[in-house]
Image (cartoon, rainbow, N blue to C red; front, side):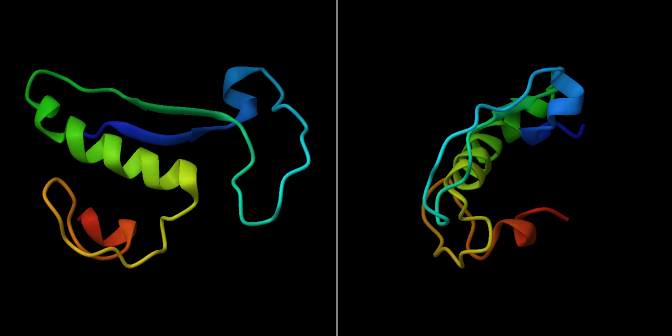
Length: 80
């Protein structure tokens, strides 16, 4: 019913993130996942993939316009 989409905490994985120097506008590396689907939950896979891509890019807060496969507004407004 509710897949998990997002960054995995290092306390969950048991692995430490790689330390790198990046500009502030880039999300630091880590492990990301879109998982936990069941038989009827697969209809959400496309939207979860798009949401995960926006999270990795650090664009959850950006107000995106509606296109095929993506609702409009920031990521938080996609989910009820």
